[in-house]
Image (cartoon, rainbow, N blue to C red; front, side):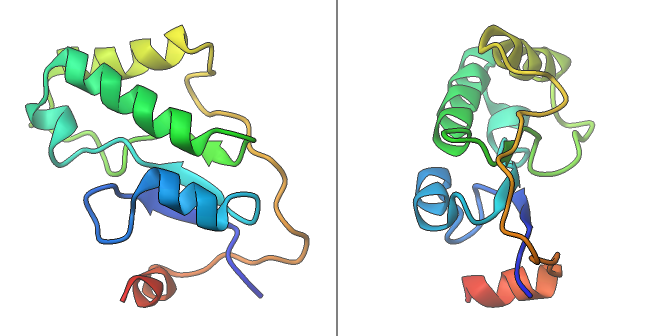
Length: 122
């Protein structure tokens, strides 16, 4: 038993630094999310959103194993221009909007619960 995917990667949570997660767990699990819906998307400028997307996707997508997504739902506090900037940046990078292809994970791995993920953080 083990973990197939970490959902969500929430960059504002303790221990959720994209580059560090990728270094420690890349190749063994898939990462989903990572685009900050608590600070960058609601309060950043479109340029800051684009830079954040480049940083997260650059760190997480190396060698596959990353599904592009915001860390949580896109709430009403997020300006439309920031949502557009997020998806435009992904298109500029040549990625599919729905996902970035994932590298296969280890056979026999099973999904985990949010509780197990929380336990690992503590």
